[in-house]
Length: 347
Image (tube, rainbow, N blue to C red; front, top):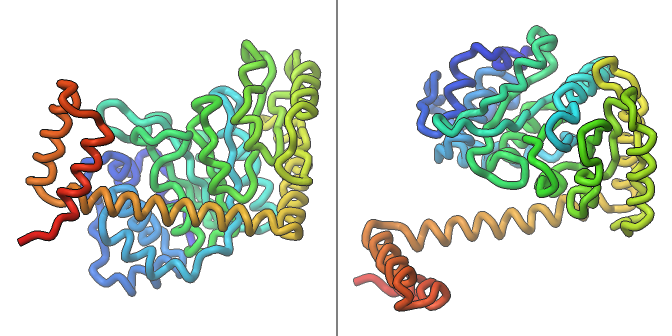
């Protein structure tokens, strides 16, 4: 079954789906049960429709996920993050080749910055992965951040669940590459790879707290460049000063992704980490923590939607905002008043 039919940069359906105001280039299936079954059968058209519905926050997307959820949880999610220019796309491409060599099916979610005009993904990592265009075992999708923080698009994990339900054994998630605040990937990935590269200016920027602490494995990419030895020593020194959150000590693996050098060793470290995380229970704890946060986020979103359910509530919010702006009230009192107004019994 082909998964790569939606990876072409010229495909209008995938391109259109990245715009928040775009309509589906192909209509949604009317029968949700049939749609879910097609996704489970790895039908590329249905998988693409499902991710588009999720990106566009179509109610059908949530209903589809409800039907598919019991068939998820089998895929391994690998996050690839790091500063722009570190070689994330090239490494993801090399990892995909190595995994396909082992006959694994792969989904790739490449998160790109949003266009300030259309809201769509403007880098299009699919262009850099066209060697897989005819591979039936790979499904590639670019997703725009649409203003979401943390290096991921808002519906990234939901899209990963669609690929999981479709039978993808490994899902590679490439973050947008925004810098040290890019830590959201560690909440959803089973293993997080942090890419560093020498000769990128101030190497200390890569060693700041936050992004250093999310790495399960450090990848020193472009390790054939001058400065690689010094950067590796700096990372190793930083690790001695940063207490590990678990018994796992993140290794430093050297790669030259453009030549696929070190990729097999990197995969070996990934498999070793996953085995240790499963054995120790750390992987289960990470997933449970994520779902706790996710449930609370859904509750938050639905409470907010309930508060702003109709035009009168929105008008009330505008009135409170005006009062706060004029310093006639404070934002905390305004929030309390808005909640009381929204939850008051209606006659």
